[in-house]
Image 1 (tube, rainbow, N blue to C red):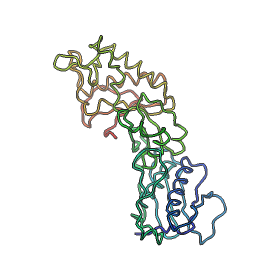
Image 2 (spheres, helix red, strand yellow):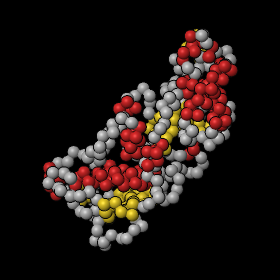
Image 3 (cartoon, one colour):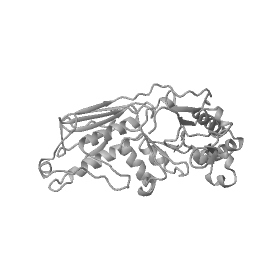
Length: 347
């Protein structure tokens, strides 16, 4: 395996006008700079220079960043390392970010928690500190995008779903820290809960990260407080109405409410292009068994609800989509709206 000699005067050549390149170049510079500032190693961090500017001296060790002009759905990347030349390429700005952080991962860097703290390096042994030589886990990586151009359903993004019940939102001092953590861990999209306003669009753009909304939150469109006076809105199980999961999708009033609630969320996030609305986690087949719903399978009940919310989205944002989930091979005769696509696997 090749080694990375931190003592060399590395120069980072970064292209202009590529989304995400500035942040990932700064992180690359910062990580190498951390290693160069270890005890006994009084070296300055690498320089970042314009790739279109004057060429550095022929003998200078360089890290070349480059990207194609594809859209963010093309997240493939490759990198290879030599003794004096490292090349990192992405199909897009998103792919380039993935390539940079994959290289840093091979160098041993980790970002375990989205807590907003400064970059931290791996534990380094005294022997390695002495000669400033760091072994890479591999000499290079090639990771192509699987996008076939068929629309949102074919985007092979790696998504991180921020559950409102987990400590991620509380642990991160602000959304910016969470976005940086996700990008550094090679996530392509961050999915925020519907009830958490997304106000970090600029930071996400700086990292070429996509912002989406939703998750296992379809049932949130029917406020549970309505159960006290309107149990008929909720699903029936064993002859009794229950408010724990999902709802009764064949009740016209239920449909009206979830459309209204959905419209509120859609208006609060005009910049979001993909909303995820999946049944409660692990409860995809536990829908309603009232006399009317009994004529529909769980997958069909799910589609009835999704189509209703999709109609509300189409009136507010004609360029946005809704993803829903049903197990592969489930029979559902109800066609989907044009702004709906199915995920076969969930994050």
